[in-house]
Length: 460
Image (cartoon, rainbow, N blue to C red; front, side):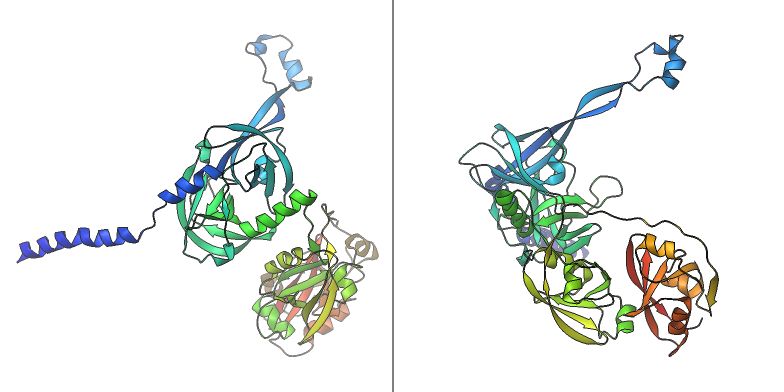
C-alpha cells in the first residue's frame, strides 16, 4: 500500500509543477521586441584629486617640510559612469535620469547593434530626475509608451538596462506599491517594485507585460549600496510631460501656492474637528504669495485642489505642480470645523530656493505650565526678527507629556489651532482652560520651517 501511495505521489508531482509553470509569464518575446530600443549610456567628466607623492619622496631631507607646509599637488583625471536609457522617437530622442548625465563633459550612447553616438543634453529636471538626450540618427527602434495608472499592485513588470555595464540585461519582478513618496521627492509618485535594479540600470525602462514602458528606473533603497528588493521607478506619464516641456522650452514650469504643509494625523484631525485624517495641514503661509492672496491661513486643511481630492499631504505638491502657472483653480479647505471654498491663482515654482537658518537668542525669564512638562519664556524682539515671526513663546525646556508629543527645547510656539499666541500668559490660558483630555494643535516654529504638533492635555 505504501509503495502505491509513493508511486501516485511521484506521478502527480510533475503534473502539479507543470501546471504552475504554465501560469508563469514568458518574457522572451518582450525582450526580443523591446530590447533594441534600450541603450547604454556612458559619460566622462573632468575632476581633480590630490597628487600622490612619488615613490622614494620620504627619503628627501625636505620631505617633512613640504608635506606639512607645501601646497597640495593636484592632478586632473576623468571620472566615468554608466547608465541606461531608451529611445522615444525614431529621430534620436532618448529618455534617461538626470543623475546619469549631470555634470558630464561627454556622453556616449551605444545601441544593441554596437553603433555608438555622441549625445547632447536637450534638458534636465532635477526635481523629477528626468533628462532628455538627442543623438543624430534616423529610423531607430522606439519604445512603446504605456499607462502607469492601469498598473496593479502584484502585476509582473520587467526592467531592461545595463547593470554594472552588462548591456541589455533583463530582470523581472512585481509592482510592490504605487504612489510612493520619498523624502525630498515630492513631485514624483514613485512605482515601487522588487525588480533587481543595480548601478547602471538607472534611466532604463520598466515594462508591463504588454511590452509598454510604464516607468523609468531611478533609484533603490539599500543599506549596502546593492539591490535589496526595493526599487523605485518614475511613472512614464510624469516623465513624458517633463520631456515635452524640456523639448519645447528647455525648462519645466510648475505651479506653486506658497504654503508649508504637513500630514494630518488622527490627533490633529480631532483637534481641528475634522471627521477623518485627510488633506494637507497648512502650518505657514508665504506673505504675499498665491495662497495668502486667496485667503488661505495657517491651521487650514486643504481638502481638494483643482477639483482633485487631497488624501495625504504628499499628494498636494504633485497636484499643484501639475497646474499651469497663472491658472485660477478652486480649492476647498477645512476651517473652524467646516468646509470653505476658495479660488486661487497658481504661481510658478522658482528654480532656486533660499533658506534662512535661525540663531539662538538671549535667555529671558521662564515659566512652567502644570504637568505638561513645558518651560516657557517670552520671545525677545531680536529673536522675533531672526525668526521672522511677529509673536510667539519660546520653549526653554520640554519634558514628560510635551517631550513625548515631539516638542523640543528651542521651539517657538506661535499659535494654538488658529489662535495666535503673543505671550506666555496667552498660551497658559489656552492650555490650562477648557476640557481635560482634549487635544490641541500647537503651531511650532523650528529652524527655518514650521509644523503643527498635537498635544493631549491629560494633565499627566
